[in-house]
Image 1 (cartoon, rainbow, N blue to C red):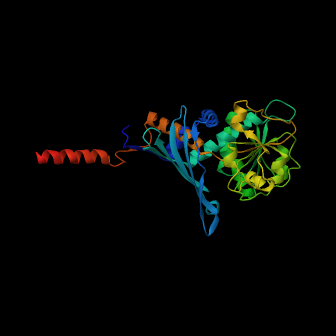
Image 2 (cartoon, helix red, strand yellow; image 1 turned 135 degrees about the horizontal axis):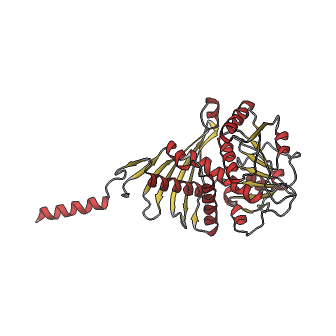
Length: 358
């Protein structure tokens, strides 16, 4: 593909290209984490654009470079507008731009909300594979509690079905019971043989399972105790702001990146501000993947995985989408998107001027 061309992949292209690739995406995310741990990446802090009159709304820029077999640079530009849900619209929208690591020139523009949801789900399920076992056993359980019945938890449910095949039951809780029931119906239609229950309250959901996935729109901690959670459980704290500092301090904490997750008023950031240190974080998921640390230190402790959501994951999945798009000839190739090279134009003008002078 000429370097002045750009491949445009819209949402329907991304959905088609990634359909049924859950296990491949989990492996892609694993490789991205391990590449980042090896130091072959560049990951500046995310930049948050806030709006003066709507504090809950934000647009986030996540630039990154990921090396090794990926060798790609780029950025995700993702908007989160929670009030969209009241309007019957999705909370998040996003675009991913991939750049050549050799020339810096943009090579692809890709719809990013599907990539965002699937890389988030793949990361969460990778953590479940590494950290979760039914208390008193060495194997995963059959039941998952899900708090927050939106797109992200639905994708996590999809990836759990692929990555943790022992699962047979989802126990759902949402402040909006209508959303929970709609979510449950979609699970039944999509996954067929899954058992779905709607919990009357959060406590019922917590005591139902030893694996809990939290994917809410909470802006600040609202859970200060977990009395009904079975000992030795695992929490996928995907929404990052549900747990109060006292909960964080009582658990074993695994993150995707320590420096990144202690920002933006996450539960871990608030905990750091409260105690003035970060040693309550035991390590990263990549540390567990590479066996630098054990998956658990105390069998009866609750393990919490808090992923900030790293731009390297969007690049890794975005590269997969781009490569599949090229191979399957999907998307729209925009010819000559970039202008003619100034250097070439200058040389041409110089040569023409010289010819005229002769």
